[in-house]
Amino acid sequence: MSEEFMEYTTFTVKAKDGSDVELAVIAEFEFERKNYVVGARIEGDAISEEGVYIYRTRILKDDFAFDPITDPEEYEKVTKAYLELED
Image 1 (cartoon, rainbow, N blue to C red):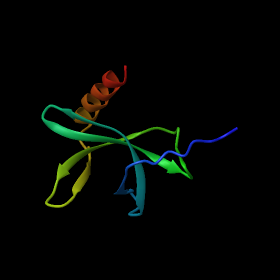
Image 2: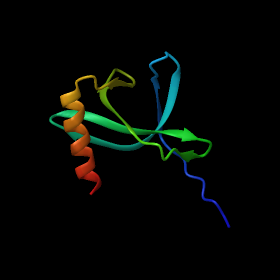
Image 3: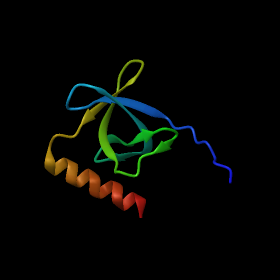
Image 4: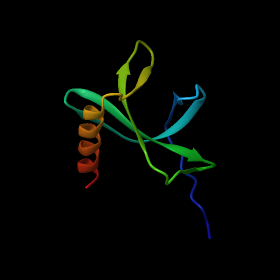
């Protein structure tokens, strides 16, 4: 049996404990004139099946910033929009 190696675009965010966490980009989308990225943890050469994380993105001069969504109402609306995209 052959395993296909997949290369993912990744980004790094800070965990609550201050450590860096590398996530693979699963999806990118726009909702209500804001940009979002969906990421999943990487385990070895595979994407973790334990859930995804959604961050708001901002374009900086030469890079992107990934901001956590702290407003529960915004998070619920964005999550719903992402799930509708997946259907």
